[in-house]
Amino acid sequence: MKKIKLGLIFGGRSGEHEVSLISARSIYGALDKNKYDVSLIGIDKKGSWHLGEANNFWINPENQKKVKLNLKSAPGITAVNKNGKVYLIDLKNGKNLSQIDVFFPITHGTFGEDGCLQGFLELLGTAYVGPGVLGSAVGMDKDFMKRIFREKGIATANYFALTKGEMDKKKISEIIKTLGFPIFVKPANLGSSVGISKAKNEKELKKAIDLAFQYDTKIILEEAIVGREIECSVLGNENPIASYPGEIKLNSDFYSYSAKYIDGNASQPVPKADLSKKKVKRIQNLAITVFKALGCEGMGRVDFFLTKTGKIYANEINTLPGFTSVSMYPKMFAESSIPYPKLLDKLIHLGIERKERNEKLKRDFAI
Image (cartoon, rainbow, N blue to C red; front, top):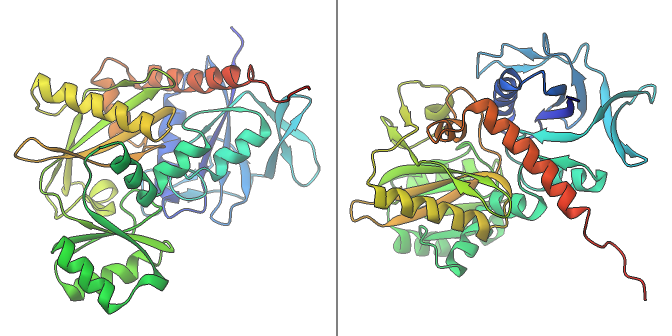
């Protein structure tokens, strides 16, 4: 069987750069090398692309705080389409270094998960894993995502979206009066809980706003929903399926970046939540509804709050969810009889399937 030439893209200019490196290493280790010829494409924090080797590209790969890319022996590259095929090109000498059939971006956060990279891959005319430009962009912007939730009748927390120019004492007073404390403050376009704070009073709220604006020009101020944190993985293109839901059990104030990736005692991810069959079905159906409403394809992890009264609030979707050793997306599908290597196979073939589908569309109109 001819191997699929796969370009695994990771890193990037996002605040989630390190998480992306860990996810990529996990994916590389799980890929069947008898099926895939893998090219490792690391994007540094300045946005430059590099082609590296598996044995030395990740430095300190087991340490979330210290992991980084080794760029010493990784040539700078770009990707181009030549006669219908995509190649990685050495920027110094213009030589073809590798041909790619399909890309697997695992670039969490801005410039990699928000539609920017997906747009470049579309221009290349290549197959790639995960949602397209629209689904990625809407899934990243929490403001527009929640607008669609409301339009589709999907319950979500009350919130305000603000830019710096809209901030004044009158507006803050209105927000506090409407939402009450505590208030979650988040960058509108970021994931992995980077830049997120839980403010319990006005002093904490000011600090939280200042922090969030360090990561984005638009922020979200959101009411706190008291309930269980339930997650559900989605897989597919036109006819997606949902995994058995999982749950994040917290020993900390909220599911922060530290709780996710650094402090092993702060949270306990449970890939198979203790739920009735009826609630499982409701959550699975709602996860698919969210996935479709946002125009997603390939994959997504939908996060919910389940209150004591049984109400389900959609929190957000993650269109390129983590694939680290503790990440819930692959773990939930493993609980649903789709093990990690098989899941990767499915995701890659969904990307190829979409490209083949889209190539059948007419691109010109003869009068």
